[in-house]
Image (cartoon, rainbow, N blue to C red; front, side):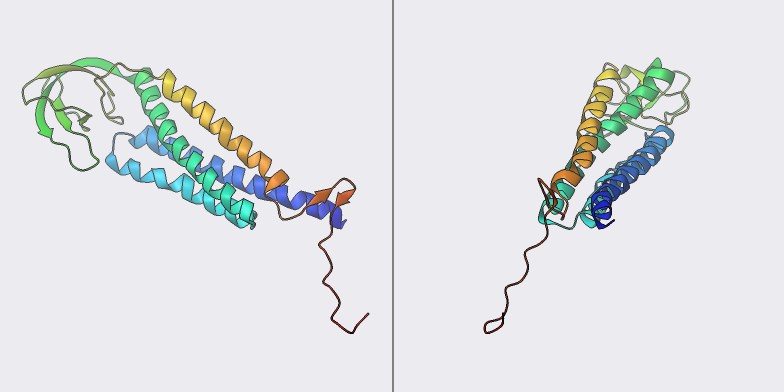
Length: 209
């Protein structure tokens, strides 16, 4: 019975980590689909790595488990960036329309934020979110792919929905493979050819048999 418990327990940790990953990906994917054009959505990049680091570190309280937690966190951060890009470009590929817009205001580069342009549609109505990586002067016209519902920010580069999706699938597969491998090398329990190896017994005190 103890052997079965020792074998099942590491897999509980992996299951917990996988469920944490699934919940984070589902919720962040939905929020990105609904509010992907908002700058506040960028704050969500910290959610999945933080949750996964805690899930792995608490499930595998070993030195190797600590290393695995930070590796999983790094992959989760990468997955967050490419995954959110995949949702945004996928949404624009499905619902977006190519229109010619007019630059109405320009925001210069500010720290890590790229320059951006506020634009308006041909009928004069403003598009809710600015065009990123844009430093054209006011009055210039450009062709963008815009979301009619204004959920996603318009883009004026060539729309490529496949590349972010492929990166998301690759990084996601690597992260899942890492989590599935944890019971074999990050668990506290050690196994020998004949089954679990018991921890060495402490030496007797001097003068005692």
